Image 1: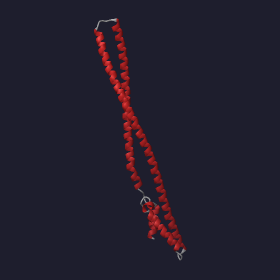
Image 2: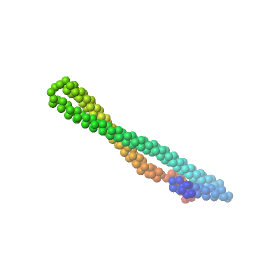
Image 3: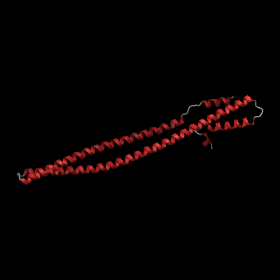
Image 4: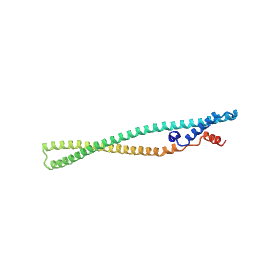
Length: 201
């Protein structure tokens, strides 16, 4: 019961008990003069205002924590989606790399074949075949160039994504480290000072 009433643990339950005792005492006093009765009444109103202020502050902190929790959930979902997308792009890039290696192997074979053709005397068929091989070689070189450019672009995109994920994780870690400090540090309110003066009286 103490934890449910105490709020942030800064004496809210004690304030409620003091207010209850003061109210009982004020209601049971019959021979007390009007000025003293009015003073007790104003003191109870001050204590009640302090309790209401603490309750409102606790509710605002709770709402803020719920909103932050939802925001962190959204960020976590985006990070997971980014990881899944990055893995898919890595698999696609691997396939493209295999294709690029195959293109390079074919180009080397065409180069060897072209050298063999060039070593023989010129003939119409050899010339035609050589031109065909050269055209295919040019197409393969262009294809390899495109694949290499695409591979470099994917690598840059992947590195940028990984860097963004690390930065997001660092921001989340900093928020988690700063949050307890914000909720733990509270300044003394004017109502607390008035409450102490009332107790001394």
